[in-house]
Length: 115
Image (cartoon, rainbow, N blue to C red):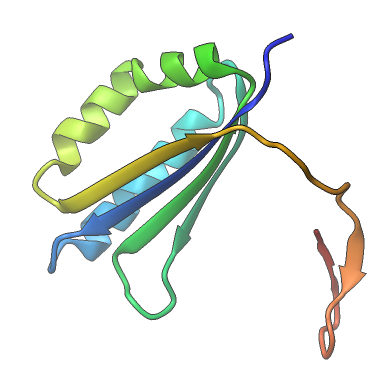
């Protein structure tokens, strides 16, 4: 069995296009969740810099990630957003260590967080 692939991607919107890009990225996340080899695809936005986005992705293997990059939806997304994006950085990683997830209460919180 092939090793999972972990992706960290940063996308910066051009000024004035933050809302457009956010909406497009949210649609992309929804579509991506049904792709073969999808494990996790989380979108984050910087709390101090609106329009600065980060993805954390997990794919079953490199072939799944390659397939994702070649989908018509990725091509359409690139075409739609090409004038809204100031920069994109994508890096892939392999996991070398980790700890099992567990539930933990956060100080002052009324709920638990899966870590």
